[in-house]
Length: 334
Image 1 (cartoon, one colour):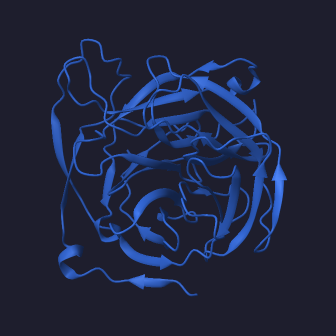
Image 2 (image 1 turned 90 degrees about the vertical axis):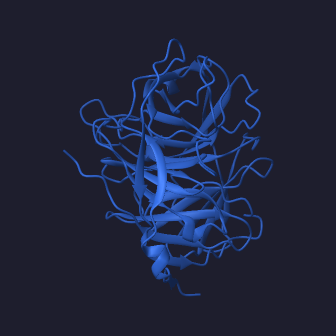
Image 3 (image 1 turned 135 degrees about the vertical axis):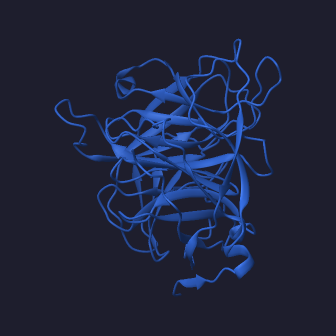
C-alpha cells in the first residue's frame, strides 16, 4: 500500500497549542531546597507534510513501543513490543514493509519500552563508532518499584525480507538509579557511546511541586562492568510531565548528525539543540515544540529521524496503526 498524505484542516494548521514548559534546561535537580521556577507559556505549531504510511508488520507486533533508525542502513528502522511479549527485535523500512525479526537470546521482555541505535564501543581518537549496535531498553516500570533495570546491546543486524527470523546474542548492562526507581520510555545513545534515559511520568519535589523530566546517564565505560552500575543524574528538561493532558514522555531520538534531540510525548514533540559529540542538550537554546493533535486517535509511542533532513517518523501502538512522516520546526542554533 502506498503512503497517504494527510491534509490538515485550516483551523488545525493555524492552531496554537499552549505548551507550558520551563525557560531552558536546568542543572541536575536533586529535589533538595529547589527554587520555584518561572513557567513560560510557549506556543507550539502543528507539523506540516503529514504522510500516513501503512505498517505491514507481523501479526505479533501489536504494541509497537519504539522507533530507532539504523546507523548504517538508510531507510531501515527497528522496533520492539511492549511488556510481556516475546523478546524480539523487529525491523521495517520507510515504506512500512517487514524486514525481519530477531530473538534476543537469554533475554526476557519484562517491560521493554525503548530502543536506540549507536556505536557498539567508543573510539578513543574520535567520536565515530567502530560499528553500529541496537540498544534495547528494559527500562519500563509503571509502578516505579523495580530496584534495577537493564539494557541489551546487539550488533545491528542486516535487514532481510518479510517473514525472516533469526537470533542475536546480547551484551547486558544492569543499572539502578541513585534516588528511586523511575519509569522510563525514552532512551538515546550519543556518538561517544553514553546512554541517556529520560523519565516519563509526573514527579514531585519535597514541596509537592511538579518537577521537570529528569535525564540520567550511563557512560560508555559502564558496559565493561560485571556488577550493576549506578546511573548519574546529569540534567533535567523543560518538559513537566503531568502539567497538561497526555504530557508523558514516550520516546526520544538523536538526529544522525548528533546535533538535535527529538523528545516525544503523547501529544507533542520537543526538539532540542545538542552537542554533536556528547549528545548533551544545550540548555541555552529553547526547544522548538510541535503538537500532534492531528494524530491523537493513535497512542503515540515511537519517534525516529527520517533521513538526514528535519523529517520525523512517528509510530503508534495498536494492530494496524500507521506510521506518520512529519515535518516539525527545528530550533535555531546559536
